Length: 61
Image (cartoon, rainbow, N blue to C red; front, side):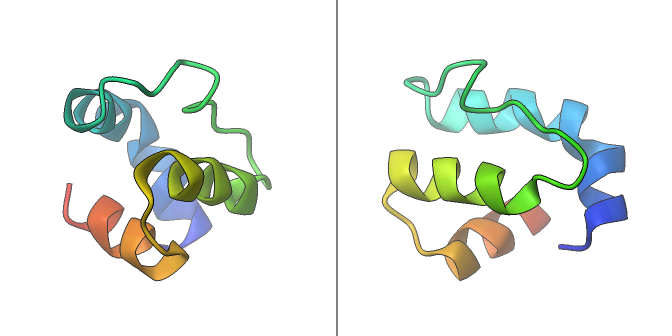
């Protein structure tokens, strides 16, 4: 998922991500421009998915 696509859709996607994984906190889902890798890393840790799985999952939302 490219950075512009993530930035533009993140607020919509954040709600869906939180529904799927209720244990994620707002801090886990904080997106800052240029910090995509940190966001993916936090999602990897919390979901147990690989980076590629996280990216693919987010693209499907």
